[in-house]
Structures are given as structure tokens and as C-alpha cells.
Length: 461
Ligand SMILES: *Cc1c(COP(=O)(O)O)cnc(C)c1O
Image 1 (cartoon, rainbow, N blue to C red):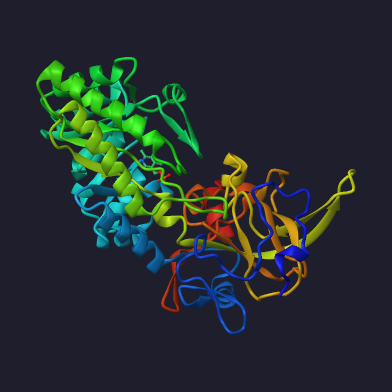
Image 2 (cartoon, helix red, strand yellow):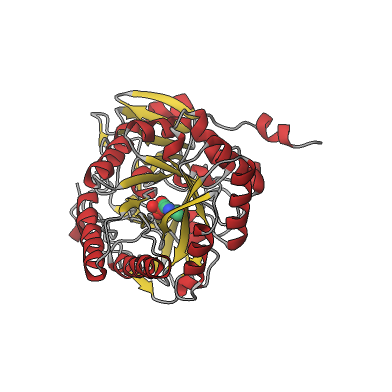
């Protein structure tokens, strides 16, 4: 095994990326809790070896560690006892996942009629479903009302009118929360105090629209206004953004009480809790997150002398992200010499931006491991790319892999459970990869691989 000091970092490597002291070890901060190596050196997830997984299910494939997913869900529910914890289904949703979320006692957020239908098909308790979205169609509002979802989060004045109309037609009273923007937009490690207002979601507090929306909801007999909803961003590592956002939300609750005499009973602080995609990411544990958010809420309520409100959060990525691993087969290892004389090794695999758009979309970073074997070869800086016709088709922009990496080797990418399969495309007529659940040495197909027949079936000829 080589020691890190023997290998100077490649000068093309970004500053945050250290040369790993062990290229074979799955770092438990990044990989699923069950990730380990077996005696042959292959990576195991959920007790299943990656070589057999690819043999049985093909490559590329998404693998979800059921125990890891369930533990993260249960840990959030336990840490946030007394709060509602709603899993944000947009991060990863299918019937199996909906059942896990139900069995671990969480609520569920959906953003479309089809996400709602998937949850209902899994038997998810409808009263624990919250319906989001900035442009819900009438058909979506009708299915939300008819199925009896627990909450509809209203996003604009037209929608308040539409929900009221659908509720009236169905002779129902629908519980609504008002989506507000606090002027806080959290991005990795910092937040911009005004930028959050210039975007499509919700009613801004600063402009007075949020207060007007609350009054509008309150005035309608078929709407039961229960609270306010704020979501400040994604992949957030600190709680400073939540301090400002929660304070502005509670100021609004107070203002609405003074204007109407009514106390809102629910405040939802949204999701966005960050996960470790690389060693540079430092997420907060759910317990720490709870104690910080709880303090923020207590302080704001105390200062404003507000009564108790029922609090809620909506983690998506923090539950499903680390539970997922994407498996690929290496096709090409291509050293590219730049005019500066520097060299970068491009490792091309059998997937790419069609199965994980996040690096291309948000410059998201990921970590990869050589998965089918261990290696003592010295580290080399690589860029893992896909097979699509775009130079931006990158999966791991910068990482170190063993320098004896060769075509036919398997690569595993960590943190691949969130916003991957749900954002997958058929670019270059690639059939979308399957989602394989693993647990205690057994694997099962959660979503099967698409086939050429599926793609041709949509093509009317
Ligand atoms: C996306 C989203 C979430 C979940 O975000 P994560 O980063 O996956 O935790 C929660 N609530 C709302 C309203 C969202 O749009």
C-alpha cells in the first residue's frame, strides 16, 4: 500500500481534493453504511458484491441500500420527535421507496399527479401526503382533493382560487399551507439575503404578498389555512440561512395574527440538508440539525411571544442520497496531454449525463471507487466521463483512482441515490438504467432497465 506522501497531487487537481491515503476503502462518511470489501476485494453493498450485481442486473445500474435508507429515515424521525418529517419524494420515488417511508413513519411530499399516484399505488396513507408545486394543473388539484391529501401547499393567487373552486365543487374543506419566500436563498456554505425573492416559487414576505395570500386563504370557506411553508435551497451545510428564514416566517405569523386575530398552527421549514458527496462536504447529523433548528424556533417564538406551532421539515437527499451507489463499467482509459504539458486521464464509462445530470447541471462533485477489485497501484487523477455526445458529459469531475485502472473494471459512484434516476433521460436513445434494491445479501429490481422496445413503443413511427 502506498503512503500519501509518495504521491504529490496532480497540479490539475482542485484545491479541495486531497490524495486519498487509501484508494480502496469506502469512506463511511460518503458511502452507504453497509459498504465494505469482501475477501476477494470487491465492493459489497447491502451484502451484495458488485460483480454479481452487474452480472445479474447489467451495467450501468443504480443500487439502493435498503437498510441505509431506512436508518436515515428513522434517524430523522427520531431526532425530530414532535415535528413532522416529510420525505421529499422528488429526490427518489417509486412504490418500494414509498413503502419504506411509510413503514419508518414519515410523511411524504409529492410535486405532481404521477408522484401522488405512485404513493397511492404503494398504499401510502393519504393524510400524510403533502402536495407541492408552482404550477399544479386543474387535473392535479382534482386528484389531490379527491384522494384527500393531508396538505396542499399553495404557491400563487391563481392557485388559491383554483383549489378553492375544486374544494367547493367536491364539497370539501382542504387544508392549505402558503409557500413563502423569505429572501434567503441558501447555497453551499453561504446564503444571499435578497436573491431568494427573484425566483418562481411562493409569495414573498418582503413585498407583502405572503400576508395577502394568507388573508385570501383565510377568507375562503372551502380552505382551511393551517400554516406557512418555507424552503430555502438544497445541499445546505450550516443553519444560518434557517435562522434568518425562520425569524422572517415567525414575524409573518405574528403579523398575520395582528391583522386577523388568527394564529397559524403549522410552520414547515422545508428541506435541503446537505450530504457528503466528497470528503470536502461536512453535513450535520440529524440530532445536531434538530437541536439547532429547535433553538432557532424557540428563540423566535420567545422573542415574539408566539404560541406553540407544529413544526415540519422535508429532507429528500439526506435520506436517499447516501443510500445509493451507481455502478458503471469502464470502457476507455484515455490520457490527454494538454498544451501546458499537463496530463489528465479521462475514464469513460457506459453511462453518463443520461443517468446523472447533476455534474452537468450544477457542477456537482462526486466520489468514485474502483469496485470490482482492490489495487495497490499509485493514485492517478482522473475525470470520469460518460458516453454521450457532449464535452460536459461528466460524472466525476476530479477524483483519484488506481493507475492500473483498465477497461472492464467496475466503478462505483457514491451519493447516487438522490436526483439521479428521477432525473434520468433517454439522451442518445440510451435506455434508462435499473434501480436495484439490496439488503442482507439479496438484490431485487425496484425499477427494471428500460429496453429498446420501450423506447420504440413511444415512437409512433
Ligand atoms: C427539493 C425540495 C425539498 C427537498 O430538498 P433536499 O435537498 O432533497 O432535501 C424539500 N422541500 C421542497 C419544497 C423542495 O422543493
